[in-house]
Image 1 (cartoon, rainbow, N blue to C red):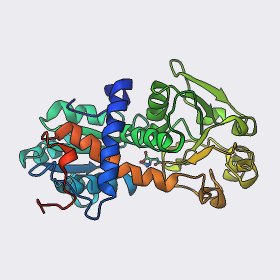
Image 2: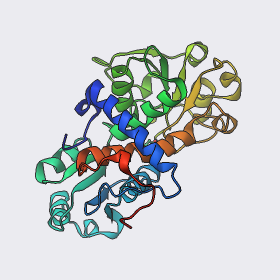
Image 3: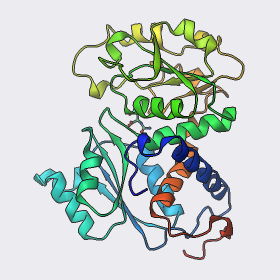
Image 4: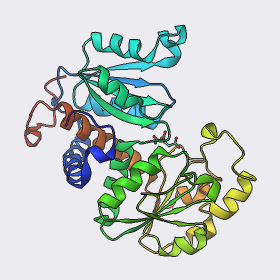
Length: 315
Ligand code: NCD
């Protein structure tokens, strides 16, 4: 596999392989010196046209733990501000000799375009409302860690589905691994058509919560909303927020997830985000290992992971 643009590039077997490789990198992360020489001599650049805390830092940490060289491109301080086109920017970066380009952009499809212009591997770190495959991988990994397997689980994805690339990639990945997904949102925050989505839909969170194995909350993405889709945030919270009283209805073994950044008090009560059953910090932690697995699988030089010494002779 050369690029990771969509969950569909992986399929069920590819997802499984990636999660298995992630296990080795979780182990690397637990070492005193969490670094291996697997990508020595490779250069990874992140090209982020949209804001990010977790995804950008996570990819950067992952690349560094694999001993790759990293470059960071920030739109706000680049020649994009002087009007340089995406294509010229990408070709400039490639001319410097890079092995992987990690792309985040507000328009759907940009990572595919970039992949058609360059020889380097391209990883989609979020394109518009469309996809965010590494988020789906880390979510699957986190669910497996907590519940053993996704097979037969009932997963509720709650909130602003319409604008969510996380929801699109998660629905694909969760169902490929055997879970059933119910989307819970007001009609205005669902995509206009759900044809072809292997999901159920509900508008009643109180009915869904007691039956769910996983409740996955999405951020209210105000920056993507072009029209008034909600009467008020307070009303949203009352009907669709995971409040303390709703969380009390969860099954003993159920877990709560969120991709971050959270709006505490809107889609999730502050206290609920801090419950032991909330695996939100675990998601972030696993994100690094998952992205190490992705970079390794795309760029890997064939170094046998099991022979890592735990001390980085490359550094
Ligand atoms: C999300 C994103 O940017 O797609 N965050 C993330 O990558 N963890 C979700 C969001 O912005 O709400």
